[in-house]
Image 1: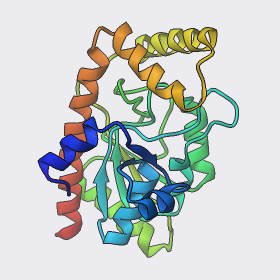
Image 2: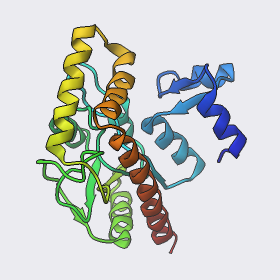
Image 3: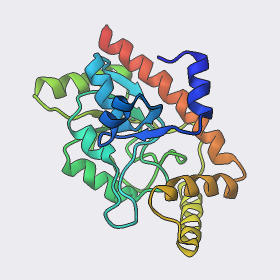
Image 4: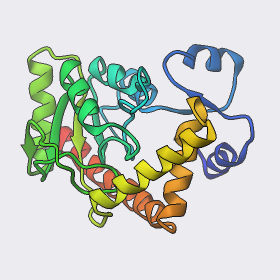
Length: 229
């Protein structure tokens, strides 16, 4: 919903907050610039009557104890369709999938039976259900509403051309080891890891990131059309 000049300002300003549900009200009250997390985007989309949105990767459970994204809890109580290419590559995928189950988030793979791992189109982890068309994804969301479920319908969409899972995992393990050695943690850890992945892959992760964003947006638009039909 932003104009081109607003998008450019958001990308280039120095003072831009990361708006999650715990600081969203303060950010709005102060009139600050902010980018929104998946949990916050889902909340605002639902309030605006938007039933479908696309993102790159969802947040989840980090290898560091007690570091868990609010995306998971937010998705458990927001009835929208979220199209993504899986949890971000730097996360503990098995723990993230388990937490989605614990929170009762509706999870389906789009034409895949295995969890996409963001930069990788698959991983060793099986998904609970698969849909093979936009109509089936829309039907899953409608069924959730008919059953009185309040969670999101999370549609995992594998990127068409990605990087093998084992290669990305090796880069992630190396980047985490370097971060520990350098004493990098907290809110600085994720930006550091993503930057190192870009460096270790010689820019391949950036290329895949752009590709999956475009592909997810196209799929989300088709699902939205199926819901409107």
